Image 1: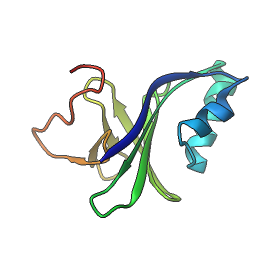
Image 2: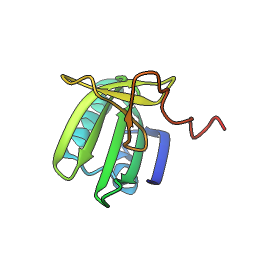
Image 3: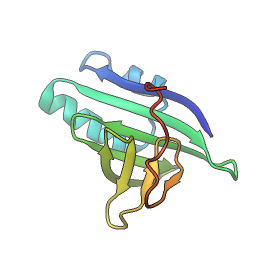
Image 4: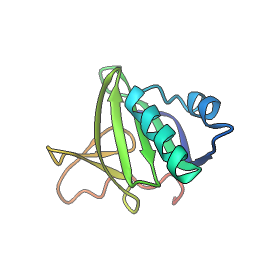
Length: 119
């Protein structure tokens, strides 16, 4: 179940740390990627989706749109993959597993969730 989300927020060198914290971004590797992107490009466009699994576990998907990459995290367990902007789906490195922005698996032929901005 999607709890909170922030889509395509512009993070700059002056404001990124408190903004990322307000977006619920806590995964160390995601923070490192955002910091590196801002250092190299002067800004990062980031989305954060916080959700709970059916069993009640908290999870998050963080997307760095500059890179077309995202990460899904459960506590300190983080997995990275490529982010599909059109379908808002994360394809995990290695396994090829597809996850929508609500943290739910996407199966063959399923186009994922509808966009939060395109009702």
